Image (cartoon, rainbow, N blue to C red):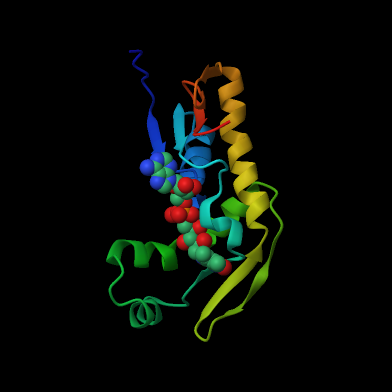
Length: 147
Ligand SMILES: Cc1cc2nc3c(=O)[nH]c(=O)nc-3n(C[C@H](O)[C@H](O)[C@H](O)COP(=O)(O)OP(=O)(O)OC[C@H]3O[C@@H](n4cnc5c(N)ncnc54)[C@H](O)[C@@H]3O)c2cc1C
C-alpha cells in the first residue's frame, strides 16, 4: 500500500471542504480532497446566499445551540469571507436583508464550488494524476468516488 503525505486531508468536497482545500492550495499547502459522491459541491448546489446575523446578540438569539466559536467567527469574519468569494472572481451581489434578522449576499454557488474545485485540480496538475479503479486521486488534489 502506498502512503501519501499531505499537509491537509479534506473528507468531503462540499462548500466547506472545497473552501478549505482551495484556501490551503492558495497558501502553498499540499491538499487531498476526498469525495464519495459523483460530483463535488454537496448541498451548496442548492444554496444561494452567504449570510450572517448583524451582531453576536442576534446570532445567539437565533442560533442558541450552535458552537460558540463558529457563531462568533460567522459574525466577526463575515466580511473576510465575502472578500474571499469576491477574490475568486465569483459573481456576488451587494448585501441585502435575509430572513427576518440577517443580512447576506446572493452569489453563484455553482460558480463558487467549481472555481474552488479548479484551484485544487490545478494544483494536482502540477503534481500528477493517478487513476485508481473507483476514481482518481493525486498527492495534491481531489479524489472522486466514481468516474
Ligand atoms: C436547499 C438548500 C438551500 C440552502 N441555502 C443556503 C443559503 O442560501 N445560504 C447558506 O448559507 N446555506 C444554505 N444552505 C446550507 C448550505 O448549503 C450548507 O450549510 C453548506 O453547503 C454545507 O456545506 P458542507 O460542505 O458543510 O456540507 P455538504 O454540502 O453536506 O457537503 C458534504 C460533502 O461531503 C461528501 N461526503 C459525505 N460523506 C463522505 C465520506 N464519508 N467520504 C467522502 N465524502 C463524503 C458529500 O457527498 C458532500 O459532497 C442550503 C441548504 C439546502 C439543502
